[in-house]
Length: 402
Image (cartoon, rainbow, N blue to C red; front, side):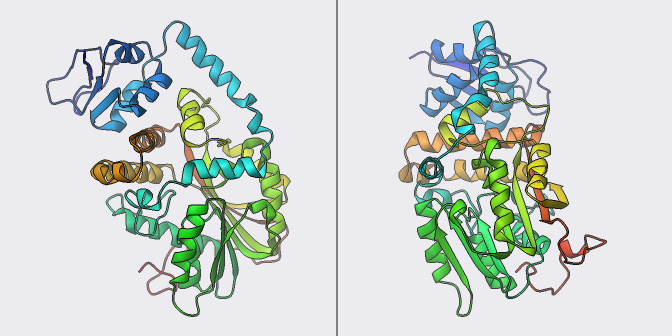
């Protein structure tokens, strides 16, 4: 079986042009090497057919040794040639026309969530932190371990919302329940989470059942559109990407309906910069990773939130934090490859590895953003702050990191 190698320059040497097949460059050891099974796979890289090259990676016909994030960055720098350039442009043009952008049934939403989240919980445990937080961490120090940074993110959300004992708190799309547990245990909230993933619901419910006596927390297995209760504080973390641009109005109207008149709502989610058009990478994510997912620009998010009756109180871009988070996840996946391959098929493992490495590159290079947007109902009676000090921890304060 013929093997063709694409090699990168060393980390000390800048990448001035894409590497050529079989022609490693640079005087030092390359930071990565891309190995193609044969001429057919090498041709995918040479002509910039990145979508099919990604599928070849999932099948094991293209492999990467070394820095996977750097390899993906170099591959993405290759411009499609000939017909592939036209096809890439047509795919980007047609992406907004997908039927699911306009309408999504509850059954379809549930199926999309299950596609992404309903792998064995132990698989996710291999690369997530101890609390199983599957969203952007908060690194006050870039050298922090992932567990510390994820706990800092949970506390940051609780402080921005000003969670108080007795507050009725909702976590929309609660994952494995980490924020629900933190809000109840450290801040005394009556915390509720909802999810469409059966595996997440089972794992989160089991975790919540093991909390100490007097902790008031629960997990619901239902669509957020079917909630009818009223809450003092609401957080949505890494969930609204599944909603879709065309349904943001419905999403924010439901959040407004669930929130008490003097409540607070924090929306934490991805956004696409106005200058970035969806391309091959997003097509891969749509088909292999996040079916039904969508990334709106920040302006569109704020517009729809205001149309629903919200006033924006604070916006924070956590893009550098998510780059560090995805890097940490990739490193953990690679370090625990043998265990992962016993839990999920090799294609699933490679899908997550490729997706998270590409995400790290996109966050590092500014092609994807992540924002925390704090909102309240316009004309709500709660006194406003003239500072942001309440968002930062004070020594010995309730809910400080443990």
